[in-house]
Amino acid sequence: MSGHSKWKNIMHKKEKTDAQRAKVFTKVGKEISIAVREGGADPTSNTKLRDLIAKAKSLNVPNDNIKRIIDKAGADGVVYEEYTYEGYGPAGVAVIVTTATDKKTRTAGNVRHYFDKFGGNMGAQGCVSFMFSDKGLIVINNEDGDYDEDKVMEDALEAGAADFISDGDLFEIYTEPEDLDAVKSALEGKYTFDSAEVTKVPSSYVTLENEDDIKNMENLIESLEDDDDVQDVYHNWETND
Image 1 (cartoon, rainbow, N blue to C red):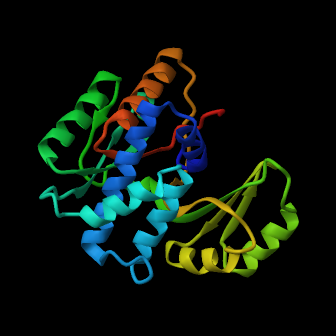
Image 2: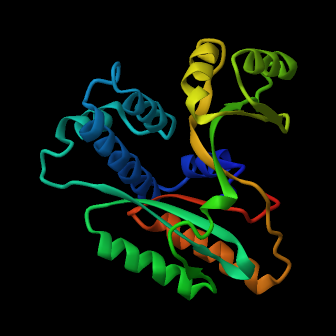
């Protein structure tokens, strides 16, 4: 997953097998559990929970599952905490890993192992985060050609978006993090979102030429994303996906 193309990861996750889909459900469930603990179980007053419910639905998590997660958040004695790890992949690719875990030592050990195994190294807090900026990102799927690109861009910019990128089939609308809710609210009802959340966008990108580096980077991302404790992986590898 590229830092500037989070939608590709989301789209890919939608198509995974049942076993892999269960992992996606687990990851979203942890996020929902944390949001309930921090802001309560009412999505009307807990905007983070409301956004996560929308995210879960976009990933085809059944409504019954979502309700069950909200109802039992914290009641089973399991408390998830969020931790972020930073490091370098092959050839100096910057990597940020966000996690939600009930056992920090396990998660930190696993993340370090993945970095070491695939030609990278986990660094200190802040070693690569300065290369990324937090941005709101709204993704609209236009594969069916339902929306006029110029109209979507006009509506997005009028709503307060900072940038608009299109490849024809998908529209990426970028905002400042604090403006995401306002822009999303202005566009809801007009358009259907594939995702709408705060992501990390790199300021520059690294291109890998060596086949071993490419393979190691692919394996590093895959191993991290397959770990149940890992929520998101951001990097500045410029891929051709």
